Image (cartoon, rainbow, N blue to C red):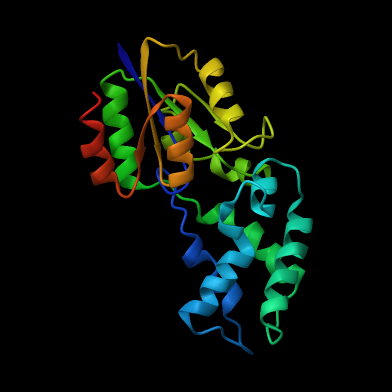
Length: 217
């Protein structure tokens, strides 16, 4: 039985730190949301816990524009914090700034190159909005390691939907004789992959995932 690895990107191979990113929306020259609970509230207003029916999930599936997403987020923040001085334009500029922050994680790059040298097939399965792709795929040192991959914005379906795992199995030519190991930092996606029949690792750090992978290959 041959091992084939399917990697999430954000939080695993690409630096994706939502709690750090939302600081820009919490702070301004005229107002600050200082407390941790305030920042938790803004984090939820922006990402809605990445639930499948959230605005961000729709953005990942190319079903909502950056502009409409910004309007919806701004309305949610303002409903909680009337003193917030921002606007939908503030949020839109913030969304447009995110791709430049999504840098490859060096430790993961090293790991991928080792796996590649060992001739283990590597794929990616990423929830990613279309406006982020141009900047993201410019990181050749990351994407040259993968045999193939799927961004959710292309088929219009996203993790943890069963359909995207089914699509990945077909596109990557995965079959019952393959030992498929999926690595993702979002537990709902990990559980969905296991339910689909893949092995899965809940990624907390590169070191932890490296160690967990040893039980499979």
